[in-house]
Image (cartoon, rainbow, N blue to C red; front, side, top):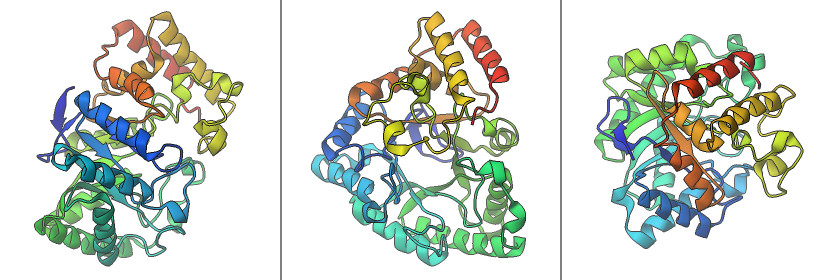
Length: 347
């Protein structure tokens, strides 16, 4: 497993990150612990979670359950020091806090996460989505930035949060910080505020990125290259669509995310299945595992990307891990590019 740094930090991690978001809903504690152990055997040392997990579905009564599962693993194995651990504080929400991310909530909810994780520190603490809202999760179709608070109100909050971030870092509770579901404007302001306040810079951004969701490819990519920010790519298999397991939506396992979660967060559209078929055909014609192909492709991008992988079992997880060592030919990459041009925005 290749190792590299997150952003400009000293966090040295495997270039593939273990995702955890269904642990405690669709996946049991035993299954989760087996996946952690297997990932470690395969050279993965980077794990991502969030206070709101598990998802599928998200429920107020299960908030924090995934962090507790991870904490129980650390308590049982003593392996905390072997992992670079990332978690997130949620923005304004009906099931955690309407107040969103403020200096007070940043520390209070970090402390709750640390207690659940049975850890004295978090290596990477991320803002799950901005207080002002986000265009992610298919919200880009109706995105209206004119409805956001005034610029100075947003920046005042960022300055106050940045100063608190510096305090948490100095206290040893957090090593580095990052964002999630952010925009170019938001990232630019966070880095500018860090310079103004002397607070920590944002080392990473966790946004959706896959063969079927490439909003990151232009302005965001340019920002990341010049500012030294790492993309932690979530839903890199488009919620399982790029595994081919849904067969165009005609065959659905009753325990799958599509069956449990309906339209996969708006990803199931009439345009999506032809796009899936195009990528499945490329994998088939070249004798490739479509899961490994999708992960391998993400690692070829001209900006720093670390895919977050997940699975319902150790066996499923291994398909994604195999993508870390798969080298795609020029022919495969050219065909992927052609498929993207033909199916540019399937959802």
